[in-house]
Image (cartoon, rainbow, N blue to C red; front, side, top):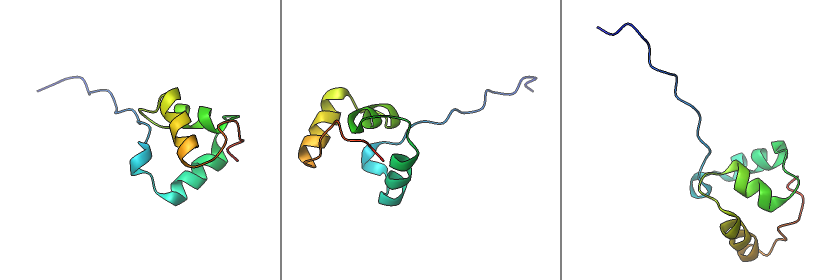
Length: 68
């Protein structure tokens, strides 16, 4: 038997490819980030600043736009 319980799992950030549109809109509304690029970097897993710039460039949206 084991006398100690394991640590509870910690929540991980979603990956951009696995997010549904409705959840993305909710995350955009609830974020505390000031810029779209910082939202992508801070609220998603495995998104670097270079990848955030590429995502913004591909979607033709300024990385310095407010997420809300």
